[in-house]
View (cartoon, rainbow, N blue to C red):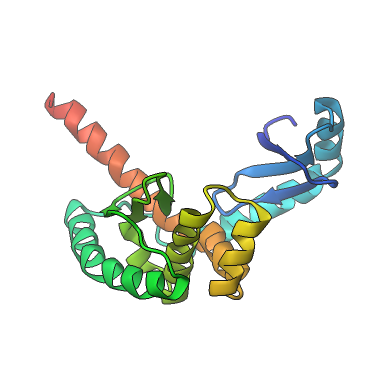
Amino acid sequence: MEEIRVEIIRSDRKTVSVEVRSDLRVIVRAPRRMTDEAIKRFAEEKKAWIKKNIEKNIEKNKAFDTSPFAREEIQTLLKKAKEVLPVRMEKLSNAVGVKCGRLTVRSQISRWGSCSANRNISLNCLLVLCPPEVTDYVIIHELCHIRHMNHSRAFWRDVERFCPGYRSRREWLRKEGVFLIERLKKSRAQSSESASETGA
């Protein structure tokens, strides 16, 4: 599609859809058997809609703070997160009925949380800047991975059982949380540039 780059995600779904995210990524979700040519035709047919929504998101993005976090801000976030998140983890792990191994809190630019096969869970310090219900969703999501190391139907049933309405919380991360991640990415890039300039 000319200047618009499309990211394709194939799955066992039966229909094809397109989404324009807050970070301006254009994602087409398609059935596994759908050919590249058919996906390209679909994207071309949706070209006007895609451009319109990219423009909408550009305008919306102007209302959000996208400036890099200062190094001191990140340190403060990490300190606060290491105090707050373990408390939420303990309460929610009791509710879900599982126990994680080791809890690690980091400043991450690629994910909000993760769970290893050893039951060790890692959480993003940016969660302390999210609404409490969103933070709880991420923690519950990772706790449910202790039972299901996948994103099966059984996994999502467990998530919904302990976090009713999780879809709206997940949507918040996709539409609003992306700006927090973007700020952290800019901070990392800025730090790298500074290190290069000083020869570090």
